[in-house]
Image (cartoon, rainbow, N blue to C red; front, side, top):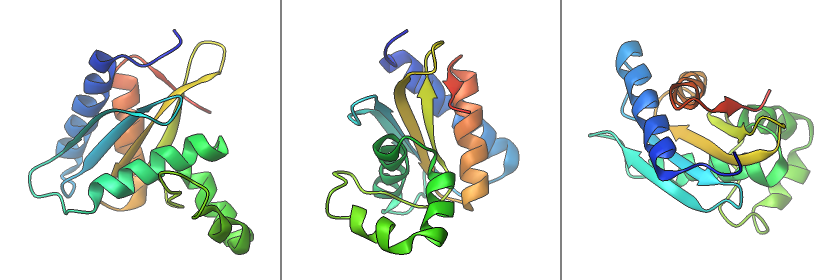
Length: 142
């Protein structure tokens, strides 16, 4: 597989929302991007705050931009804050250094897209990201 289809993107979102309901989380926004960082699908739960789109997009796009999860970007920010601050002007959709953005890979480990979630604590966002990816039958980057 070389891309994420719209049906798969919608399955990611549905799986993430199912996990959020199971965990009784705050309302989430979920963005699914293709390998080029283009939006395939976005949805937000009722009551999600207005910034959720930009935050979810920035988590997913930042992961693709640097080739690592947004959790790892958060660790990088602590170690290299000046470097991370310099990315703002050059990263088209932003880089959010908090867990919740995960790269989706094909069977060869090549990135085919990314998922970003925002709405609750970052660890909870990431749990829903991983659950959504798995629900769609896709693979998260290790």
